[in-house]
Image (cartoon, rainbow, N blue to C red; front, side, top):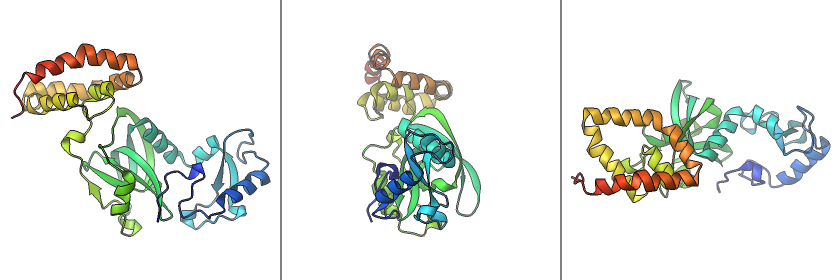
Length: 267
């Protein structure tokens, strides 16, 4: 079965009938192109299932209503915030209930929301488990978007990861994971924001200096911890300005990298 990433772009994922576009138009016309919650018109509309498909609802007209984007997002608040975090590449703090009913708090870099086999999945990096994992968005009870910027691993495909691993019943969806190589992980926030990628050669040098020089010394560990605590907001500011990116690269990072290249810490 083919994977589809966004139901709201008139794309069908297997759980929607082939004539969904026609059904959607009938619902909008029936409701007078107005939101049934707030009554507004002339806005971007969504057709909402009163009873979700995952809970036995149908695509029949009596189970469908027209909602504006604001009201539709209020029906699915956690998904709205997950989408925003994915779009902005920002780490989230979530409250998650697993298949046994156990509720825990997690730090997750959300890579992608994907619909597959009539179900919705979130593929992301779990900081606690130190691996990429599969989650069910419907089990996410709370989402807090942080200021920490993340970059998915190089050449990683959330779609391929889901296809490879999702060959088991729904109750086991958190089972499979993939560890990220050390050099793929976030950490050099300011450098990553300045170069626009975590894979630049200069960042590899900075990362080696951190791991092989700073983190082996008590004072160095203190410096690293302070950097992790205070640099994310600065990195966010830099990532939003091409002028700041260039300024930090040329006046701060490049001189540091030149000095570090002369230091023999590779071994």
